[in-house]
Image (cartoon, rainbow, N blue to C red; front, side, top):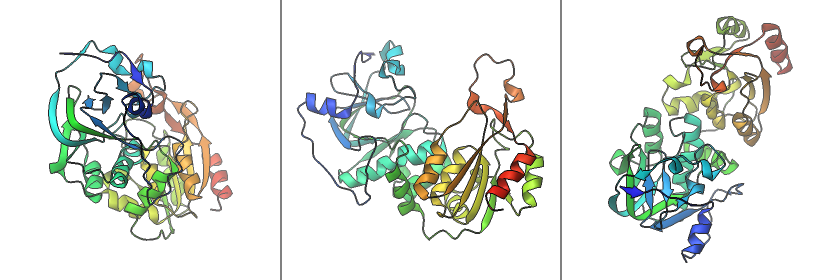
Length: 335
């Protein structure tokens, strides 16, 4: 067993400077203009631990900037709660880390993980293998393939993985920035959006954040020409095409709305929230694309299957949408 890190570098640059490595600028075709530092680091004998891509320097210090784990406080990183780490498995060559916390979620995959591939291509550093989680879903294989990465170049990690690379290549995380929006459109959008369809995005097959009166809402929206869709059942290419044809999108907040990235600037969006869980990721995408975004806060309630459970995440709250309110909002949006 190996001792866990007891300290951290907040920024990748802190590790590079303290280790005496040179820094150089690389300019990408897409203007980055990043809120967060955007970089690719080469770490000789760098290590990756777990299935969320925790990066550890050769001198056994956590590099927090590329190991983010929900909390903005590095002291709360889960690695500091472990006693020891498994023995390392050495891998020769240039090994790039892609996986990060939240990798199973469509939004975080598209806006946090895939941008790392773009940064790697900008750096022109050759990559032999890519570290991903062992639990990849079909949409993840599909998007990797669309970016030219085949399964034979993947290293699958799990909670006990501890890799020491001859050269670990660690790109910064996308963190939902505007340059990521432009990257995704340039890579995945094959034709200019032609908005005409009216889409209601259902979460009826999800474990939470569904509409408690969805049948009533669907019936009402059908009178306005809306079709009900379940994007999670479609290949990514079909999801992209679907949203590129959308003139109106109405939905409870959820990762399927990541596909608004591929909409026209003329698209109008109505997003439903529970009062106990309001996030701004989708509004940010709409702002990037110049789309009109309307937020509606309904009545939140815990799903029946979670009643009586002490630990509960408010992001699972179901939502009740008032039909009179919905009618007013539809009129407000020009329907």
